[in-house]
Length: 77
Image (cartoon, rainbow, N blue to C red):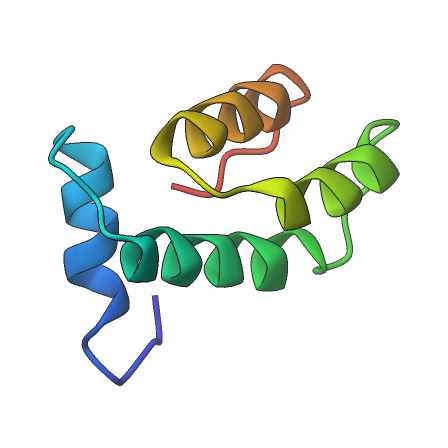
């Protein structure tokens, strides 16, 4: 939300609209999710989500990670 460089928003927009993402886009979203999941949460899946965020390398990986997080009531978007 407070990201000031202007590069994350277009990457997230490409993800949310299903457009092709570059490796750089995926890396930006992964970095955002890593920062976001490192916030203080209370979830039984927290350790797994924190570990699995580092395994994101494609937009499909982002989908799976967000699905897991959402099922536990954590929604980064």
